[in-house]
Length: 347
Image (cartoon, rainbow, N blue to C red; front, side):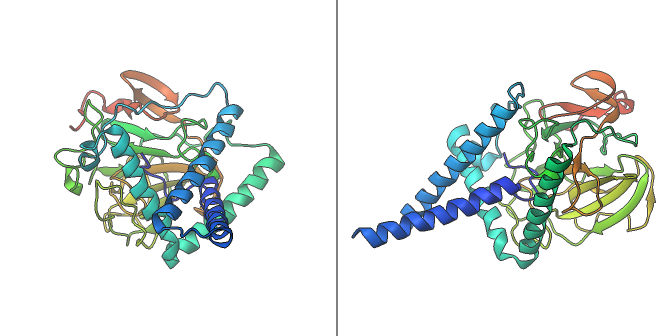
């Protein structure tokens, strides 16, 4: 599931552009050197095949680089109901097609086109920086004491601290990004059909400051994406992170809280916040395949220029066990340990 990817990683954008260029070459060659007419559906099929090959090659290279890495297993997790009735294989493929196609349409939105270009430029600079310094961020130790920015039990849908557990490893600013949702015991994230925002367990849940800090950026004008439950990525939004907040929690540590509900953000740029203070509500704005919180830490206040940093959370309760501190990753059920006795998970 493509939940929480603010925009395609730099490698994915490269593969899209390469696949488009190769498709043009193949189709043009067929038309020039043969009498065959290439139908539109054939053009689309050629593009999808080329793109799939490029993605497979990329993933294979990544796996070879980290032989002991393990990917989270979400194979038994249900899709939203409109796709679930089609079966896990066909429904999952159709979901991804809808998300990819609407994601690609972002290039026709001038706001998002500028953001995509800025992100690609920023990521290229970060790649050069990583090669020059040899620092990937993996060994970084956070300066501030972070707690989960939510009440009660949540499920880590995406994210981790290794290539296979991360859903955005090649996008260096979001390398250690986390997507949090609320789910029932079967890992379903909504009641009913899943086509109404209010049916999602995490929708309108309070989002909290993960640590003390100062607000350095606020976007509170982006509405929730339409057609929830159908895999639609909002290419019409003015910002792909949706309504969001950026908070500086320590020197060189800036946290992004993304996909919040328009108008729910109750802090302003320059405000000082305390750990646990409400900053907004969980929503579905921007590039979001379903309501969730996207959270990541980076070393710059600019969304497009900062290197991603792993977050060490304190006083955790992970899969039924208390931890003094640690990382979290996809498939884990997490909550702040201090809330274990007073709050039950929402189902």
